[in-house]
Amino acid sequence: GRGQIDSAILDVPSLSNVASGTFGLRPDDRIALTVNSTSANVGDFLKLASGKPVPIRGSFVSTLHVEGTPLQPRLRDSVVLDALHYQNLTIARVAGEIDADRRSVALRNGEVDLEHGKALLSGTMPIALTQSGIHPGNGPISGVLLADDVELSNFAPLLPKGSQVTGRIDGRLDATGTRRAPNVTGTLTLRDGTFNGPIEKSPITGIAADLAFAGDTARLQSHAFVGGGAITAS
Image (cartoon, rainbow, N blue to C red; front, top):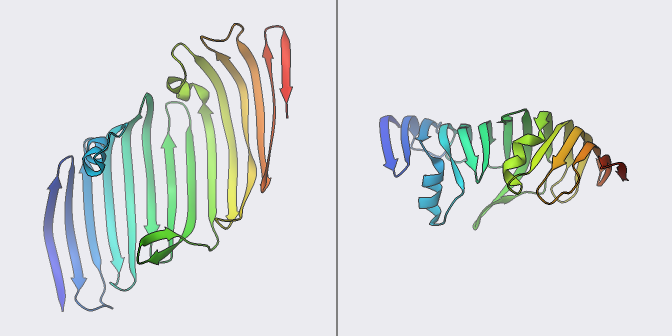
């Protein structure tokens, strides 16, 4: 009453998959399958799969565990993207663990490693299965975002050519509530910021900002120096 896969290989352009494990033939039989996927450039695969240009490049490694039963499946996927390029932006590494069943999907140990600093994230969201596919559910959500010494210079390639930007972002945000009525608390801070661009006559220095969230409201307080004057906003 059980089947075993020693090695099943599926190679498509820019993506290789190897599966193994055991499975049952009845609705309540246990599943224990593992699928390892690799791609030297995931952008090429996404372009071929969608038929549209995709501005993403980078290597991709995934280890997917299919568990549970045919009636109540569970998916656990460990994903790593290395040397990810989005347009002119370079991200050294993106990694995370995805855990999904018929009721919810969760992201654990999510990490985005930039050239200077990193962001950590995790969260859980309910899902609903219908005849038309998978949709976000209306149950409780949760999430955490941590910014650890994230330098604004990481994002300079997205600005007009010749722009120079510095500054450090730190902080934590927590999300609860539901998808339709989210509740976000926490603060993100920017310190020692500067900006000098091709359209700026005077460099902007001493940029500091605090973005605070409380429930369904957000408050921004900031100040900076331009030339010999100061700018304050809230």
